[in-house]
Image (tube, rainbow, N blue to C red):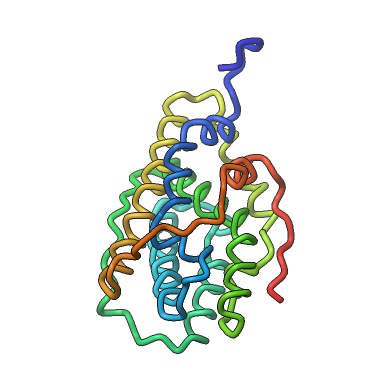
Length: 224
């Protein structure tokens, strides 16, 4: 709560504050941080994209089951990921992808998951620049895409509808926390089903990127 006001903090601010630690953990994730490394290989890049795509698809399927607005869907991001994966000519993975273990039991928990996954686009420009420099020939439809301002604005409006509902706020936070944790775990499981663990952590994302995720407006990013 704000000390100078009887009204509760915004849901967005609550999520920013309460998920900060687990968010920073992802910036040190041994596989995701490879996207910011000069050691990144084409095969590793492809595996990480496959993990993103499968995880996003799982959340979208859950959202449909809870009848969330289709305009909040991750479909545009999934389509860009698929375009990248198809361009890399990766082997078919339908029978080999590990299952996603994220459980979202309510529409409000799915809103928390959307907050995490849609919000991840804010830090992608840093990763896009590195991938462009390290692997200039690979496709970057996903990392190089423009942020969807209209979708993010609608998501924030949906979150703030629950501003004064303590139970709903806890449910949204639970969904966001679980998504941060399970996303990192899933990327690890998929990548380490193919490769040995990375020898070190590579990260070009800092705490400012976390703040940007929470406070800045989505900005256009170049795919060139």
